[in-house]
Length: 138
Ligand code: IDP
Ligand code: MG
Image (cartoon, rainbow, N blue to C red; front, side, top):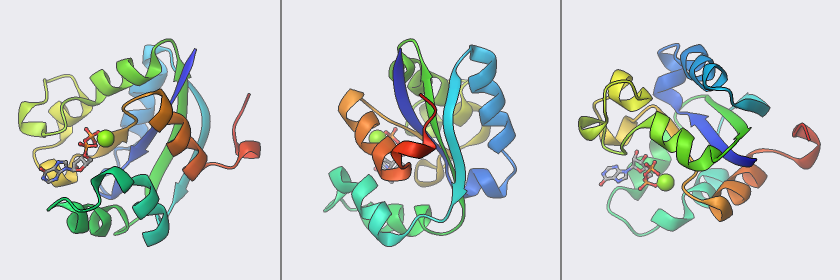
């Protein structure tokens, strides 16, 4: 059993894709251990995207993730990190396979609809950024 953080980014929320993403995760068999709609603050954005500070696209990344409501989930299941990333598709949606979220709903790298954690340390770190311990189902 492994946990990962999934975000439906502001364009995904605005386009009404929260249910689509939740449905795919539930159908696959994952459990949702926490979920909420929130506005990401500049502070939370800079912590969440700390690894990207200094990159050319960093400002656009923070501007985008803080631009509107985000739907955050802690998702649990076998090999959740790897399997959920596969379900979300390649970072650049142009390369994302059909059948993935990005491959079905995105074309723009900067606005690629969803986030999911890329490893065990980042998953636990990111879940801790978005959820207080008492918000998580055991
Ligand atoms: P990931 O979301 O697939 O884990 P990361 O490399 O962690 O990809 O990058 C975080 C986010 O930053 C991506 O989802 C994408 O929206 C954006 N991003 C990454 N690389 C670029 C780029 O070269 N140009 C513009 N945006 C980028
Ligand atoms: Mg990443």
